[in-house]
Length: 511
Image 1 (spheres, helix red, strand yellow):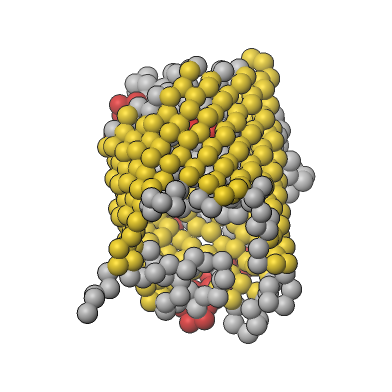
Image 2: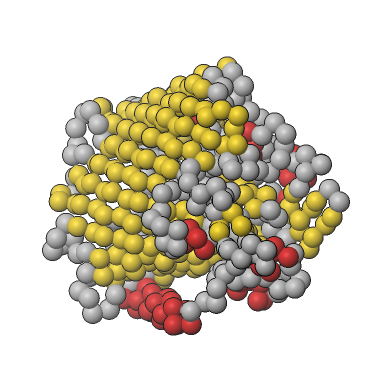
């Protein structure tokens, strides 16, 4: 929750951003896209996928890595599962103009939504420009979705949010730079769909929301031309806002404004009008969160690469700048993709720290104490919007345990201060046979507002094996075991088994 009075936005900076967004838009439309990492999909092929999955556990909860970063298809409540069916027509990265669409239906047990339209979207691509309308799984930047602990802002831990998203299709080169400088950006507006779930799950003596609106936006710059030298350097910023909607308190209902100016304020951190609560007027309107990204990729050969990356999460002015010194919180990671071999395909190591949160002291300026100290942050939480979550699962890193873990049924992320070491490995010893291993050690303090009685250590792990037999084209079998050890979630042990079938058919007319 932001606690500092925002200064006037520098007009020169705003004008620079406008120019940069304009150049990004023009480059995407007319220059097109030359990002070699984009998938090569067929425009005339529709893929289908059906799967059933079940997990069984001992202990209080489903083991952490059998729950987390599944796009909302996991839940702490043990002995859960689902049946899923997907139809998808992908966009082609090779065509100047292409369209795509998808539908993903899920029936489940012991998950927040017994029946869920998980994905339903349409998308259009023209040159390097794209538009998506609907709910689609979107992963955070730079983190390997199979091996990472999760992006601090968008980890893939919660259900997709229906939205209209406009941006560049991957990185697009700046004019006249001979593919040495690149830009990527997007802007999205949407709406949370968990209002009815909140009404039934949230403690009636607590606070909940309804009809909350969503905004996110991002801008990245890249330097490097791998045809000339195998190094890419990226910097970027991504932000998101919960705004509008209705706040339901036990003794009060607050209707947040949704005028055009409020939609614009969701993009730029500005204070609220007199139609908003006092806290929004002295700070910033809405629950505004964001991350800075820095990444370096070394790609000497087509079959192996090394990437180092840093992400700094922020919620208020003190964490957006170096006002209180160098940042102590963030995610530092390295990913290595190895040449083809039967032992290991990729390795990820991440160090995650959120313990500092600008220190334990907070004081808003008053005549009695004329000093502004914007410390004692409470990452992911907000005094009006509850927390940065969707359908009970945290949208940011899953290491900040989601509200679905809360036995008091409050929309609060209690454990926001922690230090973690995370390891992820995967390999393909035989054609069609894959394995994955995750292991996370964390030390947890709770939060400044809800500290744990004792500093708590935790260990969570996962061993997963999947197999696609060559003799049964399309069949897919996956099994896993997971475990937790420590007092944060208790000692849990469980397994998962899934069976799926996938294939595709062509839209092309046969003559």
